[in-house]
Length: 157
Image (cartoon, rainbow, N blue to C red; front, top):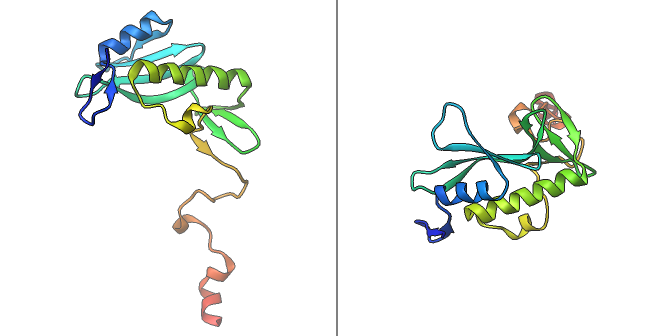
């Protein structure tokens, strides 16, 4: 059964979580070259978890649909959600989002990761890009100067 952590929340131990995953149809794959880190896979969705210093589960890689063998990030562009990997980006279908949501919910149940209200409503994206203004997400120092910010304009004022 779940055990109390230092902060008072209840979480499953590493062994309890692995037992749950194996008994509930998840593929549990040891991460190569690491100890106490595994990849979980079910219904073409994957995530990575690892054992923390207290023997509980810590999320290492957020859940994402597998695209070309790589865990994708969910990107919301306002008009459409996309699954993005380092090599490609594809529109997310209703089936993708349903599988991702179900996987995430089951992951939370098995590990004791808190289920937040906004996350339980549906798929939460890794990035939100609602407009097409290029450079909006870059730091102000790396953006091109606007006409009223240039040195010439300031001197003439």
